[in-house]
Length: 68
Ligand code: SF4
Ligand code: SF4
Image (tube, rainbow, N blue to C red; front, side, top):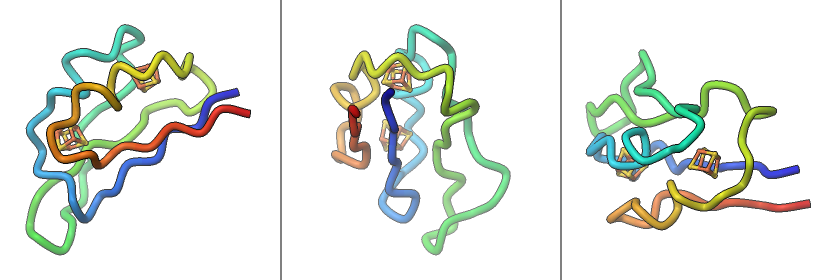
């Protein structure tokens, strides 16, 4: 099982991870981070395949993927 962790304080809301997720399993959160940005969040953790596309696309290395 894969667990995607997004560093919401570093996310700049560029949405590249959202656009490229083949499962459409990421979205923009409804609450701001400390920088005043709406960060990306995972929609359904169980639906993530661990493909790594979001990790690869994030320009600021905000995403980690843990595979069990
Ligand atoms: S690892 Fe793949 S399926 Fe999971 S959130 Fe990232 S892009 Fe989407
Ligand atoms: S690609 Fe990175 S910086 Fe852009 S929205 Fe996703 S987590 Fe945030």
